[in-house]
Length: 321
Image (cartoon, rainbow, N blue to C red; front, side, top):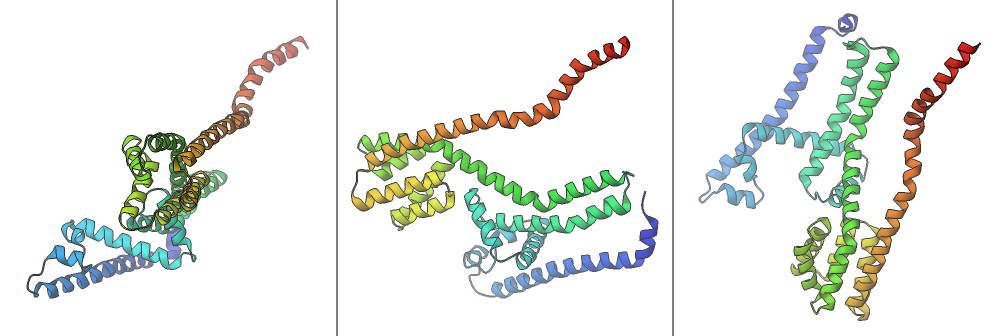
């Protein structure tokens, strides 16, 4: 039941005043930013030939923001304010680390980073409400230990949930890239040995084998065709993926370009090495499987076996005495 003594100590007037103050602060922030944008649009409307799309291209106003609904604009503005609040109070370098993780996860977008920071801030702000729910309100009337465990579990999920989800997304993408790498290198080797150039072989591979690795190769080719050198584009791809196997492939290709070695021979050696590496990873996981199975066997299967085997024997022994 609700703890009325706690509410009496706080006072309903004080609680209502604090809630009204918070709502007024949020509304003032949103409306002030909206008033600034409206004033800018009214000023630009007096200019001959003013167009929203032209202003959006110039960076003055966001065309998608003007075309969206009221709730989308207000929600996006509140999300931006919360993420900005998170940027101010995060440790130095944390935002850059989060941005790099999003790049490794294949979600290279500023909106994704802002949404992540907003989720972190909202999760931290929700922890006091969790403590209030379990220790002050307690509508389920749970015991002290269960209450403590549930509050600690939910608070831990709110605090570490976004980071764990992002790390899991990065690991999943890296695992997919690692599994596709030997097959992609085999196709590259066959294409180069058939007489295609390295870029033409990459184009054929990208069209044949879809996946995150092909997307990274496509981005690398786009950077090369946009004017970047092959070395810089491949180093940038290595930083986006951040895998030792991909780093070894990039270094081998760069050394082949530097010293004039045949790329087909280098690709053949890399394909054989990556296939052996994938076999070793599979064997390593197979060796770890019995150790991982030991915990559920001891905790779940063995107690049931002991009950089935030992309880009848114990009953017979007790009857005999």
